[in-house]
Image (cartoon, rainbow over all chains, first blue to last red; front, side):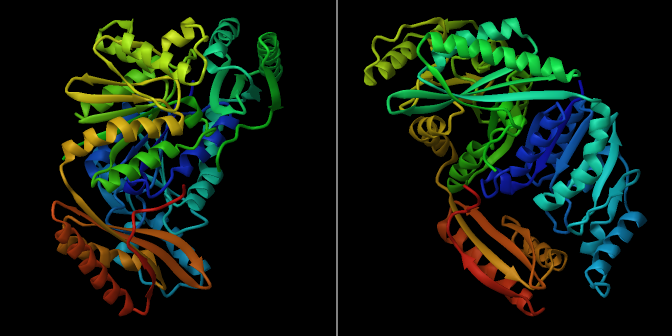
Length: 275
Length: 275
């Protein structure tokens, strides 16, 4: 089991200014690879909060921690400062990072931009860390190893986070995971309460111990209780994953139909939700 | 300082099926009261993950922990089971909770609904816990004290979570906070890079140590870099909060105008973001 955690840094997430769509996006990407974000920790732009959050991830022996936010030029961007302090390793101007930043400005015909302290801050990394190319924004991502955990620090701006993740993070995680197949079917059910569905799910989980079966109540409409039911299975065998999910769905269907409820739609694509 | 944390429970949040809009809503409600979610921890529907998450919140000596999710009738709803285990206190059928559930069904002309084990599960609380009325759904919320921390467990369905929070949680937190005033102004700025804005923010933060000043880059449009800048201050004095924010905004405006950038809009309402 490969453990991937996310550490989201930024007060905007804690006062509700910003919705954490980065977490959803990362969760979906990992879901398609057969895993998930094992935990998401969201902390304030504060040295001791970042330190405690990261310590938690390392203590849980995460294989990968994706730190998102706190990489920019402003004073509240303190992720790397905190990490270097925690590592007991100095922050130093990183030549490779500096040249990535110069390249970024040059590509935008901004070669005249001066390397002010705020700009140099984005190239100042803990000793031992490697910058990771950012094709969208200025601040490079950062990759480092801490106590056996691979830590990627990515900017909080979604387009930059996604770009760096897809180019330089995802394949490393996928290699560690190995090849996994995930089959997923989501049912819309009408006419049964979640409390009546519960024992059916329980018996399916006993018969198919590796399966993921989860109900999401969607209220009552025209006197009928509506539920979305997700069934998923991850396996090294594509056939095993598909067979299990199809069987669970067939069994659940037959059980709910026997009490007068019905499956009104079925879809077997990737998991979805609000975008 | 009153510390409020959120512990969100549910695999749907970790695989990206569901966007954590509950966290944003809670952050905003607390923001208006002059505080914030000090930390958001999101964990899987798994006894040991819930235990570790809750232990973290208690270890950080949160005054309040709002646990969201894992209260329903299905097997993956295991928040209370985990809490009772952690407290070393048995789970027992709670008469008050049971009568709230019966009342819920009665109000919907469903008095004939049988109290199956799945339904009784929603009324089975750790000894010492109190049920909290849920006017929208079936499962009551739960209030309990753990190691000096007040823990509220709320359902993950947003309409139910919000209803219980507004009726029974918010006022208790507000009383502990005391009367606080929060002034907030958000500026849209054009024509300056975040790296050029950074030293201006830094000098403002030195002059106004209690202030919150944070820039959010919004890309480049028609050759102009665009930034949203939030300025906020919380104080026991309404006047002090307002005066500080207005002064910071005036100073920042004058600084950015001196380098040819401009404030293109200003708004002083509650913080906003995606809903």
